Image (cartoon, rainbow, N blue to C red; front, side, top):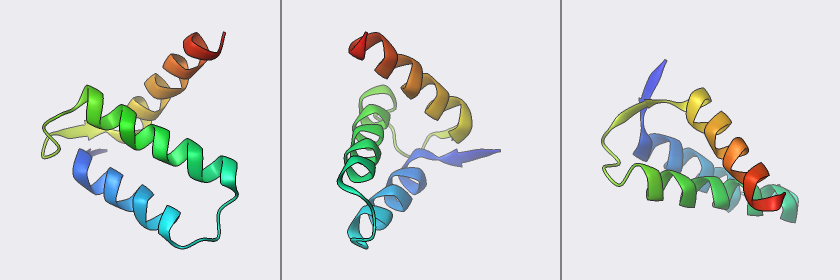
Length: 65
C-alpha cells in the first residue's frame, strides 16, 4: 500500500514524542525519518512504506558493516 512520505514521518515522530520508546528505538525511528527526507525530498510523494523501510535497513547494514 502506498502512503505519502509526510504521513510516515509524522507517524514516526509522534511515536518518538510519546516518550514510551527505548532510546535505541527513538534513534532508529529518527534515522528512518532522516533517511526518508534524504531519499524522498518531496514528502507529498506516495511510496510503499514497507519497501522504503527494507531499503533503509539495507542501507544501515552497508553503513554499519
